[in-house]
Image: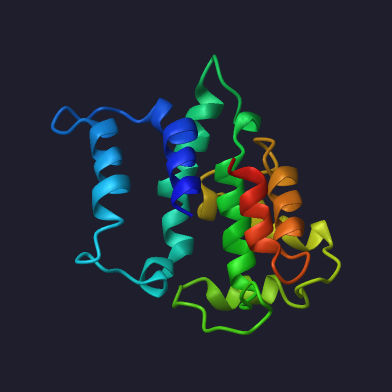
Length: 178
């Protein structure tokens, strides 16, 4: 996961980070990745981090997607790891781990609505891409309509890989983080 976060942050996110002038963004990112995350005295839990994810996606990733859309030199379709994060969120919402065992999903104000929209999707089952359309087109979640910016198909493809069966999450991460 740390290699994934490192690559996503440096390659896809950092080119569009605005320097606030009080802290160097690259130095801060490097400190977070090399000193804070590995520090056992600064513990955090995945459950806490995953709380209210639907409220975090637009600011954490949507703004970067919007920057790619607005850029004269870049295209949102160039993004690979941010769409994988979005697909990972959808995968998380089906509530089974990489071995297929159920787990408790962290609180989120959109959880009931998202689970209703994802109803029937199972690990190893067929994925109807149209079932994902109401979520992926919701700019209130992602800050953009993922269909309009050309990322929906990529997210759907990743989601299919992540739900292919037991071990799919680990295999997908290995495949895209080299």
